[in-house]
Length: 171
Image 1 (tube, rainbow, N blue to C red):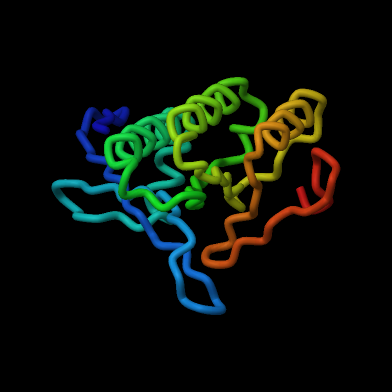
Image 2: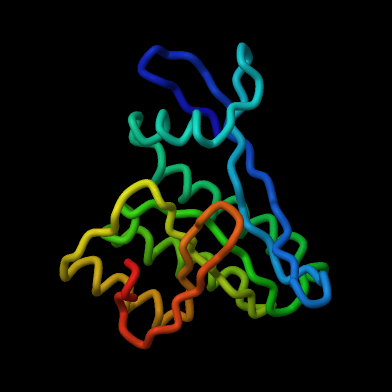
């Protein structure tokens, strides 16, 4: 994905896959889809550098959409080699949970990968609090109905929500 900043400098966004490994037997349970931002001048920027810039430029939601589409396509193209039930996690910001497009992106991903029964997980980034309104509650409820797992991305440890309510206490 190539994007233009306000200064019209071209930057290249690349996806990266980090394995999710079982703490008991070191087996690979799935992957977390991450973004790496490459620039001609500075090389690879760390997430703490490019995430705020992407937020300022309004690129976080389109970037997540792109990653879900690209990853879904790659998994479908290699479906015979994808382990059944594998977990695929994407980081999402609080803003996503108020947008209908998140439901559409998740449903498309699940529809495309249903042959292998993949488990979609959304990891809420810690940068902003999630809105407390009816729209967000409705989207969270619908995600649960779709079977999407929710976690808090705390840079290495996923805290899965297990509460039956659409809004978990820590959100």
